[in-house]
Length: 254
Image (cartoon, rainbow, N blue to C red; front, side, top):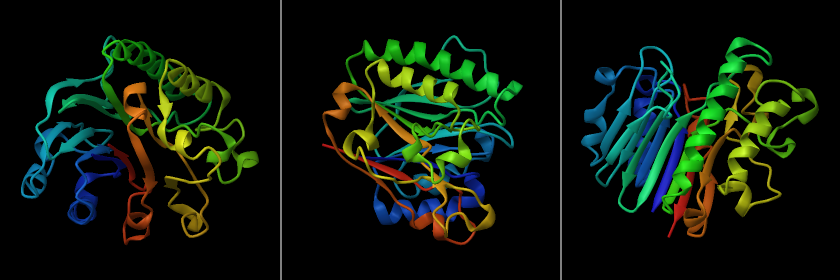
């Protein structure tokens, strides 16, 4: 099975890119972030025409997450449990024998800001739920835009970004706490020394100069990491006209 995660930065703007990519890759499950539309505005028919089922958690203008799957999507849950949140950032479901999550962690805006505090609180609540999910002993795949570069290796210029948003110590510690529960960063588990990015700013030719960061991740339970074959960042969609600033990441499991 191949599962991909992709922050599309507006599904309606990027619809042609996404549907064409699905036709070319025949991905089994696609986790989307930053839909930037409400449920009734999501182009569901475009995916059903390709043979995909959809589970959508939309929001007007901002955020929004979805799960797109060839197989039926069951046991759908919205929002991180026991965390009051008006923002559509978390959707969880069961597909076959796997539990999958599409997540869009808050950006945090600026270190020390109110939005930064919200980000840390979100991650604390997520930790509690992720700890609970491990008790299911399932193949669990949590994919999405975590808005955190785990290590200096995941940043094109670590010195420039030191202590800034996406790279600050408190953010990285929160992500480490998630991994320390017993999860694996799938990409880093397979490629411990590889420098590879998933996001490039729109400004200043960042993509052309490969000035990016690895902030889109798959966090896997022990049952899932044992079946992981590969993790690949497909940068081709980022080179298209009017692209998302993120590239899709593809996880392959046996």
